[in-house]
Length: 362
Ligand code: IPM
Ligand code: MG
Picture (cartoon, rainbow, N blue to C red):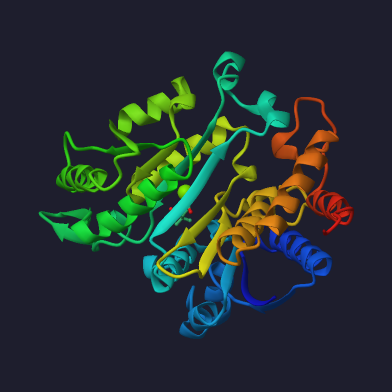
């Protein structure tokens, strides 16, 4: 198969982790006889520096003309003081919105080899951590009006959170469908004791539940959910959640699995074209030191093969190669135990590729 992939290295450690993931994709292409053609896209701080815009129209078009998009990370302190609509993050938000990818899927799964890196007590980890956060990605407070004004001699700022029923229904469906393919438990997370958006969210979820009698729907307030994720994470199968709450809880969920550096994410809309990225940021202080963990991005590339290209065998083989490297005890700095030797970003990528090379295709 031939696929066109838009590749966005972005800022900070972005280019380092992306080059390992692209090399892994090339290894997979060689093994399975596919052809991946890459189109490099500038987005984030790097695009602002070059073009004065964190996502120029031509760059968005390149993404829309590809079969899928692979992204490293964007942002950094260098761009903290520029106007808010030019910030690197704005490029990412415009990309998500421009691609119409309303459904962001963030798995929180413990790798048995890394159980000791979880900050939770072993008796909690041993009960199992394997859930998915389905985060609404192109609505809510991220996309409402943002304003700062002068009022009575002081500044006042406001950010509007709003959701329509149809925006909630389409992400709700993804939540139910995802649960249906797993342990059939869906937890809808909101703040319905305070927010109108959340009351509408809850009502739409319960309406949808009538179409999914095989899925058990529960509701949880977001503050309680933040607590339950560290107290008893094994209770969760699929969480469906609005944009900002999902941003916050997905960082928490990743940390209990050992490291945010291991977690990929997929963002999909109604078609097969997706946006795939690790959930961590651009880690500016780690840039250029060969210390980043490329596994989150390599897993994101595997997700792209699985969900956008229907190449599940190829995706399985990437995941197996990662597992084998972890079995051998190799650890990047973020997942190494105290006193353990650490493996660099490039070396980790090369180790994964050397396992891939042993794959036999039937
Ligand atoms: C994420 C990030 C982004 C978000 C930032 C970089 C805009 O934190 O993907 O979780 O808030 O969605
Ligand atoms: Mg985040």
